[in-house]
Length: 340
Image (cartoon, rainbow, N blue to C red):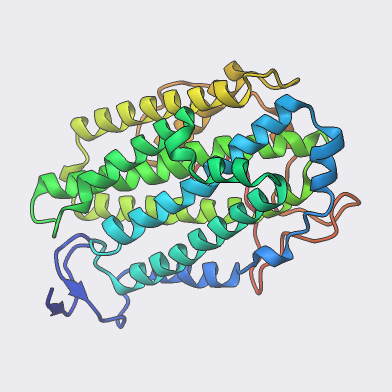
């Protein structure tokens, strides 16, 4: 691709290399904010988690957590592949690509976090191997992976977004990974973590999840900012057909995540039901639709009162030795039920 001065539109083919003047200052601010939100896996204290798994949790709860970290270990790798293969080459603004570079680092950090979880939580080598290969041998995780890869494959082969159909396909990929993968699959997984923490369990996992949650919220915000920018520049792409396809995509994602809930909760976890998880997913889906400027489909309420008690920007308490709310030179808060 040849260098150009500045694209007239964000999805125009080319490779713009000019940072000044900034055409999209909001992307650059998001990049700088992400840099300030730096953390490392070594800061997470898992010292009490192993004892919880051994002596405080039921077999059904241990099954839940093993399935959960198995999904985490593969989910962020799929997101990272989509960043490299589908998004970076088509979002033609250097300030946006700076953010995507930072996001790629964060996805790798999340993978390291979850691999550390598996090594800590699953002492048996054969069980760890099965967890690392979750997309091959766990049907509920394989179904979610196939959903993700189908949308990745539809864009991966596009050399450039030359036609309206190409740009529309790109938008659907971006919306899928923001609204469905990060906005439903990961949000559903975070809810399980905070449910366990509300019962006094796995505070190391919850502390690390706070940081991952903050990162994922920022990733969604960036993706939706890209969508909104394209909407301003090319409003004709946002038609009834796109709205219909987004709705069908969300329905499929909810079905995948509901099947995952049936797997996780199949042994019976006191205080948590598949019906409640599905209602929470529908609630989250409505939030994503609102962010996209589309009408709600489910009109669902958040059924999880324990999420109201989980302040992601928390202070140290007697359960946890570390503060997960630090951010150099930045103030603000993140809420679990915000519309991103």
